[in-house]
Image (cartoon, rainbow, N blue to C red; front, side):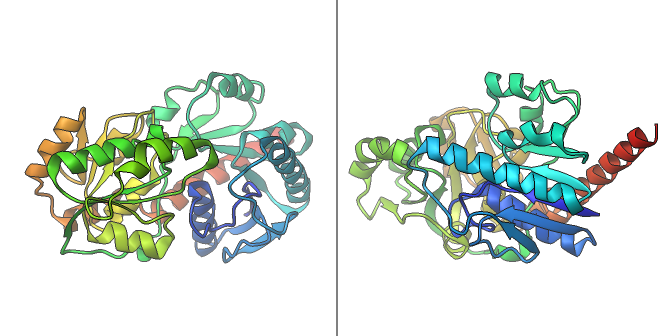
Length: 345
């Protein structure tokens, strides 16, 4: 099978720092190659994923400062990539909603992974393309959609990239966008309530600069609360691996939350507020705790007794790259077979 993986053109695959979708594409592509599938990654020219790569735009453009121009850039990239992929690929697997608008113009099976939260206007848009195979990244996300061709495939990660650490240090970690929906301010509150230092890593996007300046920066003292900036893979391993627990105090319906799996791969339990996929990703009492309030998080920290080896084993069993890739290969084969059957009918 020759599979086109169409990513957005804004961030390299894999990403240097921010870019959960781009990390997913990179690990899926390399996993497919190891599994005997021939992937072609459409991204930008800065990508280094170890598969065949094709690009229309040479450089990354992130963060996005002019949404209108970015929208046109992505539209042009998707149009070019899909037309190109239709020439020599058996199936097209896109990552952004824009791409499926081109699906009626190519005679190839077409899949879209839903990386973002449920939004009514997007669901109405998806309904206009019932021939597309949609992939939800959690059952919580899947339940909010109604497209006829829809299934859940959880993300997986390459566990060899994450360092397991048995002996933890006495600090908490938070990694993610510095944004209200991610609950950075709540993580700081937990640190102050418990007296346990907190290390924060993540990108401050322009739209959330005011939130950072008003709600986060004034509470950064370099002792109880430390901000280390965006984190690449090496920094993630250091920050998450040595942390006694990672905080995930979300304030929205999380589609998946890959950083939870990254933390657990390092043997670090996750203390999360309930929402969206959290109950699917964190097994309460095994790989962390799913909490209903800040008070419950602080109570869990006072009696935290989860072995790092148990946390790592949980990820190996449930969120390995091999499991994710196997599920996608099975889906691709099914889609291609169905397409062949339609052509023969």
